[in-house]
Image 1 (cartoon, rainbow, N blue to C red):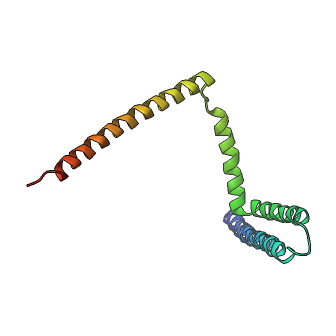
Image 2 (image 1 turned 45 degrees about the vertical axis):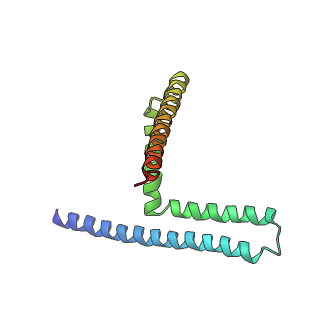
Image 3 (image 1 turned 180 degrees about the horizontal axis):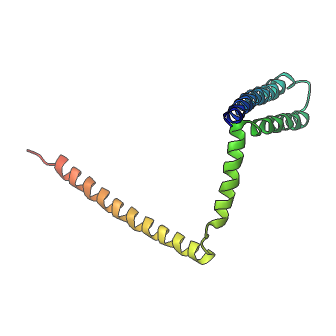
Length: 136
């Protein structure tokens, strides 16, 4: 029984090493693709028009994104995005009427607070004017 556990540990260690190496290789590929897109765009600026360079850059960047998506971090990010979409579906969004009423309340409070601040500012300016105009 202990030999089976040791075999499982050994195989899981080998699998982990393979995943790390695979992830590193995919990151290198992604970085190289981004660099090729950037340098190629600059290098071929005079030889090709923008309508040729832009799609080529888009394809290279999409390939880089796809390579990055299959790394360990990319897999984690994809899982996070899937879970985020599930959580977004659970949210109860306000109706149009509730959103409009809340917007009007916020606008009203903003106007009231701005008037109060304007009044305080005017009062402070008047007070400072009075103090600075005093002759001793």
